[in-house]
Length: 150
Image (tube, rainbow, N blue to C red; front, side):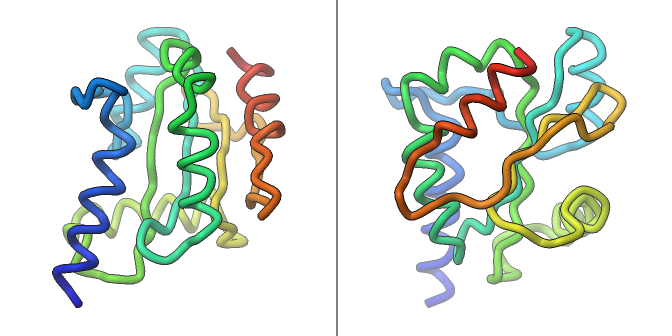
């Protein structure tokens, strides 16, 4: 069962980091300090995404309907992208990454809502956010959020 969870996380992570040709894309970061540096350097906002990769069904639906859509790809040059995974299987993250992610959870997602898509300034100030995802599977509000700050 442990190996199944690891395989799922790898598939989930690679799904975020591959384009339609299966090539790796490097716009998803996991380091908040690096995301802030890039945002400041490139005068961009940060899109911070809180997910529970191995347990959150709405997160999985949002990935398919929003993050994997062709429409989403047009925003990849407008933001610095940061994914914060909070899996239930503790073996899916290194201790260092787990510590960093839980620190971000405590500071930026105090209500522990999943999924949560937040737009932050380069200094780390929350500008706006969209929480949750409906079973109706309409990412309209997520795209409206992106349009606000692109």
